[in-house]
Length: 112
Length: 116
Image (cartoon, rainbow over all chains, first blue to last red; front, side):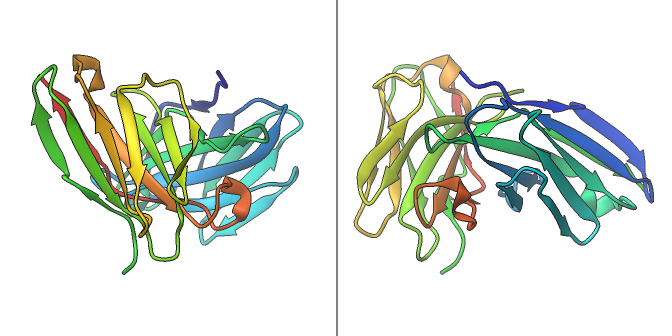
């Protein structure tokens, strides 16, 4: 069983603060890492698909980095806004299969 | 038609009953994956269907079964329901079998199953 961990489990920040979360995954058999944003009662929304060590991806105020050798990815949100409040999930795919191994998510609440 | 649609959104079943959950995949997608998210956990892989054939299965017992139809929609069937089957069931479609395709997966908003 592959173990994917996310930290922190939950986070409360003030509007305008910048924040970051961590996703840890096995450093062997890496194929891809996905980040999702998931608002309550909605569908998880794809943020990034990361496949190469050293990848850095950006979408607006959100960015992500990837280190496959040490098995971690960071998600950064610059200048958090209330609409950023959601659960952020990472999902690891090994080169031995075709399934996602999800972390338990980081729940972000941005306080106006 | 865009997006992934799951039905029903909520349902309540009694222990021992059978349930069928449905998923319509996004237009152009030929792969459907099902995940179970129990309370406090990340989604767990149940199985994947690619062009109507099962294409990988997670650690779930045989009473969890599925189908994919020629239009690539899918069903998840669970027999002999147990209390621990209470969870959110997510369906995701993709264009191809691998998550590194670059297209990612499109998820539905899930079916909340409660077993009493």
